[in-house]
Length: 260
Image 1 (cartoon, rainbow, N blue to C red):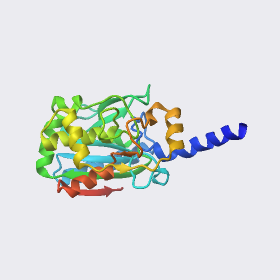
Image 2: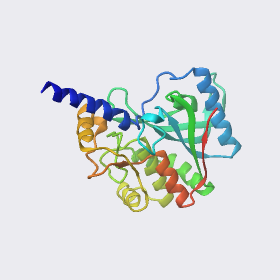
Image 3: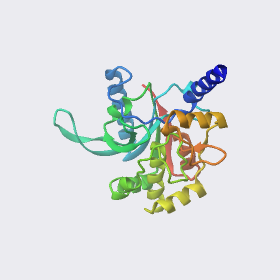
């Protein structure tokens, strides 16, 4: 019996690195040196501004990609919107505000919508690399309107799951909320049922290889690792799957990676 539980523990430890890939916690302090994070945040903003970007989808690398499932590179995704901003010294100007869905500090199985700065967003990065999708001009305008409207908050589901099924309304993670807002802007719909129907019909999520034992032990370890909203196989929305969808339907002006 003791050997059995030792094996169970090993299985849990083996499962966790591969599926804790969409953790979207708000960083209380930078993982990397703050000055480097700030410089890189400015670099990303300058590159977006150089391209005349009003709205971009940006992803950060919050875990070593070697421990992530195949096909997954980034762990948190959000909208960067060119906006009126106020700096810490009280100066007003133009820059990018980041519209996030973050897990709450009190409960990893719950989420909240938070606006922060590019430096705050990248404070959770373990490697300074950003995945960037710049939608086409028309879609950028639609996204800006949707994000500024009540629809953005109305599409938030606070029941958080790392591996949320993007075609289901049961749970949601940061990437799924990004996708829901994208679909609302793209199709001009606000109802979540129609949005989920469009996702099921047109979007291909990223498969996550996860055996039965790992699925069971993961959900026992944390409510945020539930796969209740999936069938026999597990697939979730990722930065890569959103990029693939947008490129397939000619919705992206450009998709690229940026490093210091």
